[in-house]
Structure formats: C-alpha cells, structure tokens
Picture 1 (tube, rainbow, N blue to C red):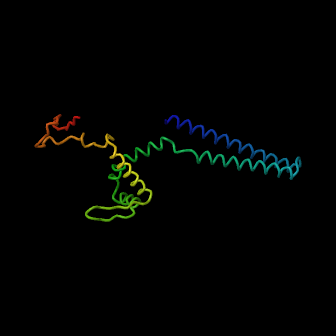
Picture 2 (picture 1 turned 180 degrees about the vertical axis):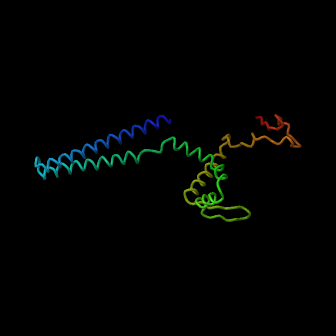
Picture 3 (picture 1 turned 60 degrees about the vertical axis):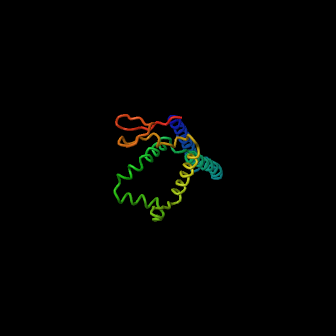
Length: 181
C-alpha cells in the first residue's frame, strides 16, 4: 500500500514537472518572439496575437498544476504517522508540562462543569463531532453479539480472591476465568 502510494506520488510529481517544462517552453517562445518584434522581424500585432494565446496556455497549465497538487491525498506514511501519534496521545500528554497540558485542554474543551459529582465537558465543534461519532460507533458495536467488546472476560483476576469459581484456572499465581459454551 505504501509502495503504491509512493508510485502515485512519483507520477504526480512527473506530471507537475512536465507541466512546468511546458510552461517554461511557452515563456521562452514569448521572450524570443519579443526579441523578434524588437528587431523588426515580426509586427507588434502578430506578437500580441501569439503571446496572448501562449499566455492563455500558460494560465491553463498553472491551473492544471494546481489541480494535480490539490487533488493529491495526504501520503499514506503521513496517515500512518498520525495514527501512531494518536495511539500515544495519552502517554505523550502525561509527559508534557502542566502549561502544555493546559494549552491542549484549552484547544479541545469549550466548557467544563461539575454536575451530580461528575465532570461534564463540551468540546469545540470538530472534537465534539468526533466524540459523538465514537459514542455512536461504540453503541452500535455493543448491540452486535460477538463484536469482540467483552474484553473483561480475558482479564486476569487477583490470586488472592477468596472465592474462585469452579470455572477458574490458576497460572503463574494469577487466576484466569474460563468460560465454556
């Protein structure tokens, strides 16, 4: 996937390079024709007619270059790096100074208040949309049986538990619960 992305990027770069070469070729034509006009080899009218057409071509080339550049998606490597960074966000947040943590929270949180002993937050719009989307995804996934969300059944229990159930197995000083169908 990354190799395919690199190939697409290289193809876009080749296209942009070719378009710039076409643009420069037209610029040189206009410059040479201007010298011919100054030397009296062509009329001013002919120069204006040809140079206007070539300048229009140059503008079209610039638009195509901008289209190629703007239509290019972010490289896959950038997306992968963003995912890696996102997965380390909590760890990195804790490593920041208090002032840096405060700056990040001010960027994210629009309003915060205590209600019924719980902290309630309202995030700024793009983050609130993400929170709502994540809550909806989580809610829908919980509705599906066997969706892999029941992680607690795989967590080890403390070996000091006074009443291990008959469906428990002790390994290495920890008690693991075994569920059978």
